[in-house]
Length: 363
Image (cartoon, rainbow, N blue to C red; front, side, top):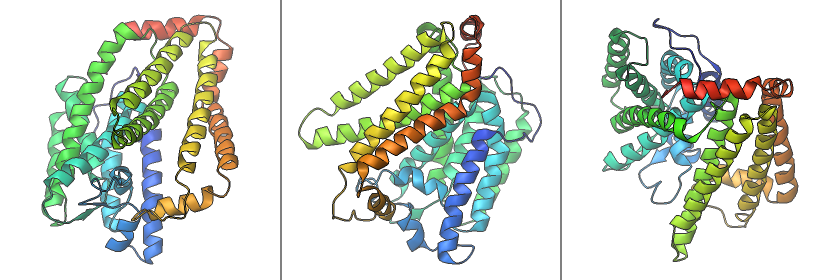
């Protein structure tokens, strides 16, 4: 975890994860606006590209739990949510680092949609990053309650007040997603603080942020595999917990292997090489799993998946192999500084990472 604390100022300069989320969100929403030919997207277009609706979970369209958060109704809706992402996300990312920031953001997005779906008693269609940004504010409040955030109470009074005022002025606001995302962000931050405290007894080294981000993304992939395997096992009449437990055990083994590797001389370079290989294997296995979906049948309500399969299915092995090579190369490029640091290591890197782990408890 980064060793610095959030500044007491109202505004914080955004960092890498915030910029990444803003870029992806603007591109996704902008694509819909371009398709619609104006600064707003109709409901039919938003539904087609991932809007969350009443029976999405019942139809096992779980991808919508994430996709809806990157789409917006119009330019004003997009601008307000991106403003909240900048104002709140920069503080949170500076305090907890990009890996945990992305994890909190995704948890708030997913559970905001789940809770919002449970509250709705009539058909609906919802899009927007409001649940995820509300989760950021919830996580900041959690850090402040724990005494780990140096901002004044007026920061929350102003931001929560403006958020509520804006919501009251818009009758189309989905309160379930807002409140669900806020609660999810607060709870996720508290859980991560407990995990960081428990890690002192399990892990020897404090993971560099680039390694942590990579492991977070791999954890999301493992969770999707476990979820899919559990659903298939239950459908076949077996125990749905077996694939989930195997996936969790494999992920924990990778994390502990990386922890041990970081503690040895030149271990950081070794870890980056391991992650490059694991990323390539994950992409390859995902490609093989996607290949099983290649069929003439068109999935109902899944146009983005149709387009993906139309490109992928003619040559799944070649595309999977090229994507795996690309994933490994991208990992090595993004972690070039860590590779250089690891290659030049004469034994001090592992010592410093072990000392940081023993020195810092919690977020």
